[in-house]
Image (cartoon, rainbow, N blue to C red; front, top):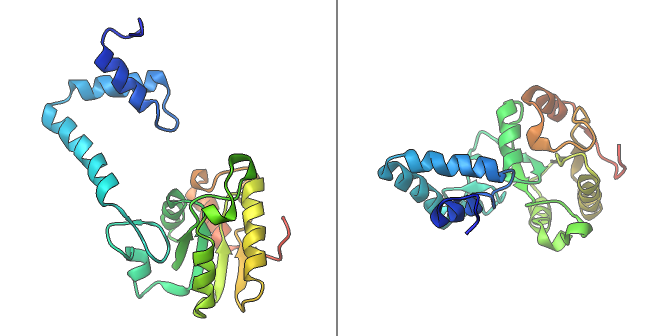
Length: 206
């Protein structure tokens, strides 16, 4: 047992929390001790919510965002503009764009970006399903809303090459988002303006 902890049970719980992104040992210890002070039914509700999320959460068959149903509420909403698809890296980015209240189209969640350094290739992402949606003929515009990083730009270019043969407008969000920034950390006003002021994408890095 680590001498830092008086209990093996405490140490094991802390170790599990440190597996979460952005959680160091001090924060993990604080969270575990907080849960330890709670009533057993409160802790049970907490653990049940996580277990049910893992077991029951689905991914939308159209956009791949997380959902309680086979088709997510955004894709199922007839008032959304289904001719416009905003391509994002992850579910957090969907939430970020929705919070701007400036976008009424639909989404496509890639599940990451192309990153040879991390062993992530196009085959690991939801790119083919995006091409299938465009090939169906109902899509007029693709908005590439990936983070302004080298990996994001590489993914933008790959998607551009894949969609060149289709009669669809490709645009990229305006670079009000600083180069190197992750989309989910942008403030809502800046992100909203970046969506509204999107520019045509010609396969070149801005």
